[in-house]
Image 1 (cartoon, rainbow, N blue to C red):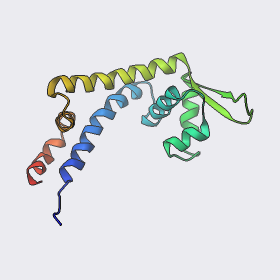
Image 2 (image 1 turned 120 degrees about the horizontal axis):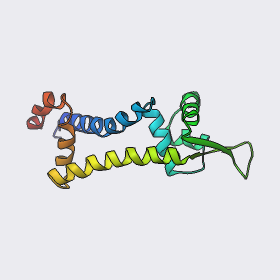
Image 3 (image 1 turned 120 degrees about the vertical axis):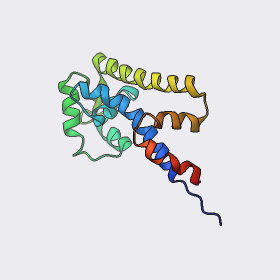
Length: 149
């Protein structure tokens, strides 16, 4: 069996992901929030009426990890909680217009990043990942691993 060195691909993915997610982080941090706030807001925007239980299940986080995040989103007027019409004990989550605008702003920034990269290097996945990774200074330190594959 031939051993395959995929260290380069792992690091490539890490640095490309870091570029992609930092695009959103920079916007959300200006609003005094974190990546978790963005993730909650994104899910709630895309699945209006999602229950807290289903949100936590989808995001694979504990109930304890959600209280502060949801409270902040509600305080900022980005999310509202409503009782389910089927079962008043169940709480459903919805974004407000303000919340939807923020999700749209973040999505546009990430979409613009991807479109700029596609314009520069085309649709080849590896080329796109390398271009995105090249935005991170640490990627320069590990590029040599590509030749060791």
